[in-house]
Image 1 (cartoon, rainbow, N blue to C red):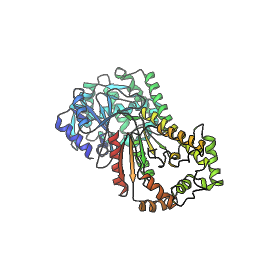
Image 2 (cartoon, one colour):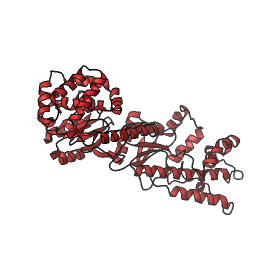
Image 3 (cartoon, rainbow, N blue to C red):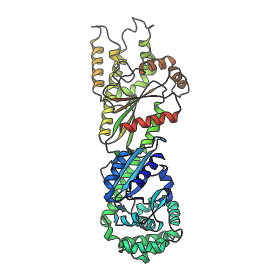
Image 4 (cartoon, rainbow, N blue to C red):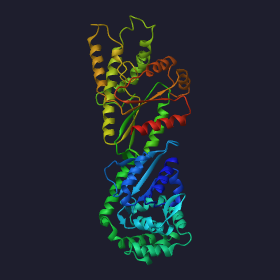
Amino acid sequence: MAKIRKLIEALNTSGLRYCHWKSNLSLAEALSGQTDVDLLIHRNDASPFRTLLSQLCFRPAVNMDGESFPSLEHYFALDEESGVLVHVHAYYRVITGESLSKNYRFPVEEMLLQNTRAEDSVRVPTKSAELVVFTLRIMLKHTSLVELALLLRDWEHVKQEGAWLLENNPMDETLKLIEDWLPAIDTGLFSKCVAALKSPVPLLRRIILGLQLRSQLSIYARRSPIRAWLSGFQKFSIMLFRRLTRPQKGLIPSSGGAVIAFVGPEATGKSTLLAEMRHWLGEHFAVDQIHVGKPKSTVLSILPNLLVPALRFVLPTYRSSRVETQYASKERSEHSQSVYPLLFAARSVLLAYDRRALLARAFAQAANGSIVLCDRYPSSSSGAPDSPQRSHYPVPQGRDPLRSQLARIEQRLYREIPSPDLVIFLSVPVEVAILRNKTRGKEEPEDYVRLRHAQSSSLEFEKTSVCRIDTNQPLDQTVLEVKKAIWNAL
């Protein structure tokens, strides 16, 4: 991973005191961007380290709930070759223990930074030093039911890591480090804990040893056992609630959230790219996706919207796609079609109201840090898709004040919608769009596709950044271009 290699090279040449301090059995995965990069930085080097990250275009992120562990910072950067988001955990103190509460601060930073070796050009602790932290972390996870449940998911990997750290029998050095840096721990008990993880012994025995170890670690605790348990239980409840209600991560960019719109003609790949971006960003950040072209009903529109399917069946010629196609055609009848249907006008106003309500919620989410991805978005081009329609089909003067009033209401509703933070404007030749449309499950009539292509190719967006991307190229290349555009906007 080029971005991570540049970071490691910069750390090595700058003379900053650092090490990749845990889970080094999986160091190759971290260097390839598959897992987080866990760096311990000497506190005196914190300021130049942050400057170095900024020079490499790493950006800070914070916890969405405002809660974070002390002495821990999150940074992200885009690897422009692969499109992977590199996540750096920067530690200035060794705050560890249980996964959820991390209730212990062990004064072993100097121990880890002084006892290092090179592993694939990365400074990592010696196995004897890493074994100290590994044993404490894993045994403390045996002291609560919630932690045990989380631990059992990765138990095979834990056994592999323990066996790897015990290669070449580093126990004598490890016990000496315990005596020097953590004198509150009985070396005999620590040896039993290491042996229990190596064998491993029955679960009940490991739980007893974990509780005994925890009793000796009270001097290093950040909270009392009861407060630590309550904190862990609270975070577990929040994590469970999120997965049940909104499966998204809890980090947000320090610069804030954003509303990002994907627009363009039919069959340009909006749905595919939105799915790619949601997965990519959702691995780390709070992300939501909405369909502005088909907004959810509001209290005002829920009843009329329930009647839409029946009206489409009874009055098929009043479907929006057919009405728009008719009024764009030069062959329309001046008498029978000179005035658009009243139902079409009312439906357009309700749609504008629903879109405004949906986007108001989207901007509220973005203000709280979420990244909101929008499928389609209103433009300032009258008559364009998802934009004001009635003013594009004017009523003859004095012909119908009701239609004129509805047109004014629709215009006002759209004017009140804020501009997005970024518009991803997708394009493709019309003939390609027609071919793609035929392979989709939601195939539209060809004349409608041509009309929408013409309308959408000249969309205008004021007061916002627009990134135009030609999707008539390999998907991986398109995805990478979109990722770069989004990351530059965050």
